[in-house]
Amino acid sequence: MGTRVKDIMTSPVVTCVIDADVGKVRHLMKVKRCSAIPIVEIKGEQILIRGMVTNNDLVGTFDDNVPASQIMTESVIIIDPEASTQEAAQLMIEHGTHHLLVLEHTRIAGMLSSLDYVRMAAE
Image (cartoon, rainbow, N blue to C red; front, side, top):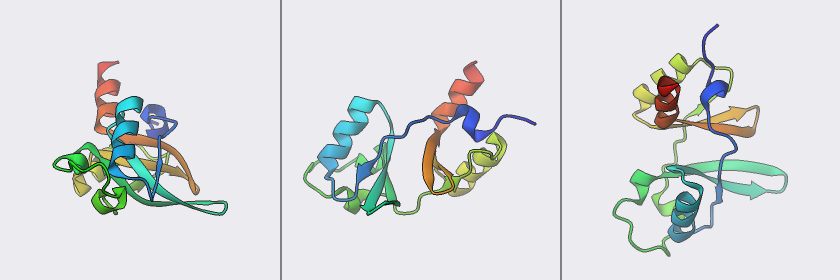
């Protein structure tokens, strides 16, 4: 059957709320040792994905008081945990991204990064 996204993804995923500033996101990325953080908006019971901040988004942003929403990438590429790793790799290449957000129904199940592929190859 082959390797599935759920087999190599990172979980749980660190998220940050839409009204956070760059300083908060930068701090979380450092402390949690991650290279991307989904930016979410909480509306009642719903968690809405609004974008993602990656290390690349932080390059050249020196003011930690800037809202994360101003530097985030709004188009987040999403994949199902049951998808094949080959399918995920094709999506990453097609969209020129190093991160895919893994959603199971409407819940954030994990994050798949190019580093996860490196870990898989190293095993």
